[in-house]
Length: 255
Length: 267
Ligand SMILES: Nc1ncnc2c1ncn2[C@@H]1O[C@H](COP(=O)(O)OP(=O)(O)O)[C@@H](O)[C@H]1O
Ligand SMILES: [Mg+2]
Image (cartoon, rainbow over all chains, first blue to last red; front, side, top):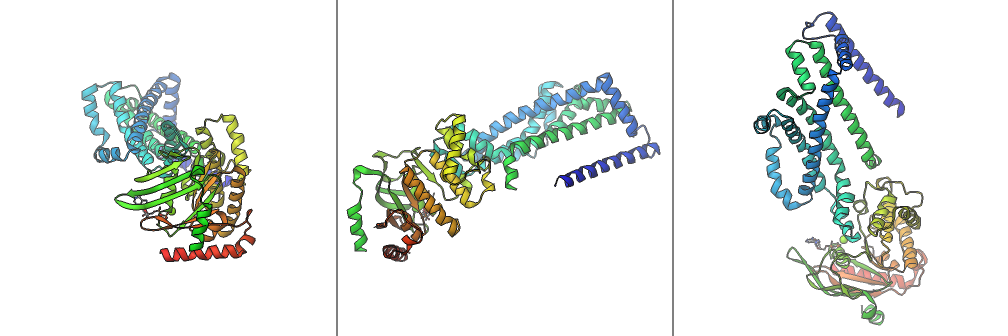
């Protein structure tokens, strides 16, 4: 068991190393013009330069902040609203058709609306990121709350549990797998929208860095930014994994 | 049929001692008369078993006794007071233990749920949960999740959680119905011992006629469409009961025959 995990780790490292080698080869052979494709060596150098000068760190912090605020706001609103809608059959009946209509709406479509209303501001970015990442969480929470085993509510009645206790000891833990799955999806959406908003509104962040680097043909800087975005996506997903396996330990027991 | 009816008249608990009383209870759900009408008294400390064909209203009657349903006619009383809602003194062992336990809580955590609602302090809860687990033969399984346990263990756990309520009454809906014969007999004896030690009143629904006679002080047979009492038998078999000796007694066989004929005729 342990060994096979280690084996897979090694294999995935080997694949990554192979891809980087291929990238270096392509750059060295000038298969693609260096104006567009820097080698990994140059991208890495640019990354280090950005870190030591602090420029890139500021941008990284900017993107992380945008992402975190939007995602947290969406989490609070999504879980609270989802709990309300999901735990009531009548609410579900009234609200579900509207949600089905709004859900497939591409969030990029509301960006112009948000810009018109809020300007090219941090507030606009917050609104767009939160709105976009709200959906997976809202729908996940609604589903989770709607799917709570009715027998458990009877157990709660027989035990005389308070309304608050029912929410926190029965409904929330029961809906946790769906909520966490929604949160995971939202994390990706939040990152994408943070980058888009930074590009459009010129807010301090990796999106802006990438856009400006591209415009001035600084391909090494561009790649350094893109690599950093990849790392953010990867690390936040890992953190989510850790949170899930901690919170949903009981599901591991089931399998 | 005349004989058991006579026995009933002799042993019928006086209204003063009745812990649970059904007084001309009727229940209509979705325009359909499910129960019409049941009058029945359960004495404190009594073990009353309820049998009847599938769909005759056994579960519904139990839910009325639990306060999970309100009757549309007549009244259900607990110690003389009308039942308006479930009460802590009345614990319910549900048939589907897999659904009644919290899968995200360990065995100890599931028991703790009941202890939390009675306001017990955290450090006391742990000791009490361990004590209750030991009582139902689950000592050493405190940290297991329900999904890591067999059906028999899960039902034991549900019973332990009910005992955590310190109930005066245990309402059990075919609690051993889904278990294999050996596990079932073991649990029957454990339940009898537990009940004897706590003095709780038990209403036990089952479709297993022998189980009803083996466990009960009295057996009530329900007739279907709508649910109503069709037969009451007083079980005068000596206690403690024994899986082999009790089941071989002529009286046991006679009661089994009477119940069997009743169910046959009711279908
Ligand atoms: N909530 C309900 N609404 C309408 N009919 C119901 C409901 N619950 C049970 N019934 C009906 O009442 C009858 C008795 O059900 P139940 O008490 O579960 O029977 P038993 O436990 O004896 O098998 C059945 O015919 C069933 O279909
Ligand atoms: Mg039933």
